[in-house]
Length: 331
Image (cartoon, rainbow, N blue to C red; front, top):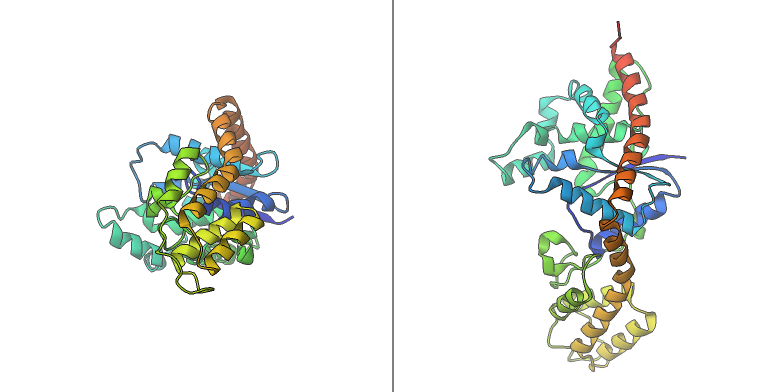
């Protein structure tokens, strides 16, 4: 069974864009591969070195992923900072990472432009920390987006460099895992782009949103004045609403409103009201699981403790072997 590693950013709550994007695929993948999913709290410090509520953010994202279907009895779900071997392997890899190659990383140059007063060493060595996360479990596959592909290429560089320097075949060469057509791109409510928290709270439907919050957001969703010609192409803002309807509503509901649009009879208020009802029906069981988990601190502590133990079992073995290869010995 292939080993898969993927990091989860501690950014708080999940929205439907996340859910239909990577998360549903993670839930499926955990039954098909040996999966390590970690909450990347160390990584978050590269851009937010003084987080306001790091523990709260970690807890919220853990709860959301559990509610969405990640099973700690099936996969290994842990917090990055609970596994100290991450930082030791990070240190060892940094010894063989070169300043020039790190400075040429596109994401470093972009972040340095955006945060000129916070160009810290962690930001520069982000690729080696990511490599440590992956190589710690000798992963063969890593689900990554376009923005992480260069980092994964550097992970392969670091793995191959270690093997070459010490004349071993120790670290495998991890490959990108692309969900391809399995990924469903969920549009936002502002009429353009994808659903995302960075675009504003009103652009996204979160898994924990209340019935009233969903209704208000849907009624504010961007529309136009309506079609003027039968069967005319839907503009982006309207197509966004129909895309949302495809994933949360019954096929009959979608067909009804599609026919109303094509016949120039569409009433956007009715469409939004129906979409709000269907959206709430879809979110409700996820919201209920989130609410139940928020008050079950004993279970959350058990999940975090169990995840750290499982992750460290793999991590200790890898770091111990890497130390031996380099030449560290106990006297």
